[in-house]
Image (cartoon, rainbow, N blue to C red; front, side):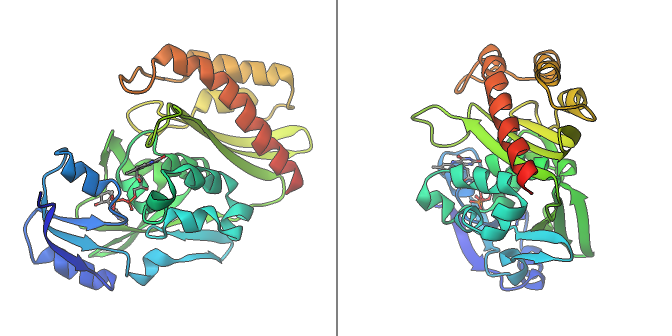
Length: 291
Ligand SMILES: Cc1cc2nc3c(=O)[nH]c(=O)nc-3n(C[C@H](O)[C@H](O)[C@H](O)COP(=O)(O)OP(=O)(O)OC[C@H]3O[C@@H](n4cnc5c(N)ncnc54)[C@H](O)[C@@H]3O)c2cc1C
């Protein structure tokens, strides 16, 4: 089967836009191709006239600390992110999420840019970036733009990104004293792609006080969403079994799990969400103490 007619490498942002300009609608960007190629092969997406590979654009390969922030290039293979000491120090949830994506072969090509742009509501890397409150840095012909990651999504598999926009990098604030994060997921033993349920938590503490937190379950709606009532049940409280019980009650009452025919029922997801929450929170909380 023909997946593309032309496959081209862009060496700069300008060149990527030139390649896009010169043809019709059926040009698309390629990161690692791990979602894209499969979708075309399985008939879920039309073959492309032209695929423009973004991996040689220097800005997409960045992985560094800059001005108090961690910058992760949208084209960095997730295997590199999973083993990066600076990502481990500043965004442990992202390390834990990227470490679980696919198997070694997939992780060596898959990128966070593709994970986010594919926009599935349980994509592991994307869920961890939401908990870290990442900002997406986007290139477009008119210049650069920045968007909070939650603003990028329109629906399952659909982003707000225009065809002529490229995600360059994700920016995450450097970890400060009292902050920690964690990511965990529940997967069918024979599963290869998306989990039954995943969860990323970022928390800031002062001794036993929960100063702030972000809680993101995937999938919990058509687009990634913060579990704001769960967060409110703990924010500003002393960490205690009572406070955790309130957060668990908020999960049951407000988190919108759905039944998906290939993975799990909403009822099952509600049941396992409780254990997943307790374990992931404990891990983020402990890390926050050591920061
Ligand atoms: C066997 C297997 C197992 C997998 N397991 C998991 C898993 O456990 N968890 C999980 O979350 N995912 C999993 N995936 C899905 C996939 O590997 C990830 O979503 C991956 O991160 C996608 O990145 P990519 O670079 O390969 O994206 P691509 O396939 O290259 O692109 C995906 C989409 O994003 C667009 N795009 C790519 N880069 C950019 C950019 N910089 N700017 C704008 N648009 C862009 C493309 O045009 C395309 O529409 C699995 C896939 C396979 C094949």
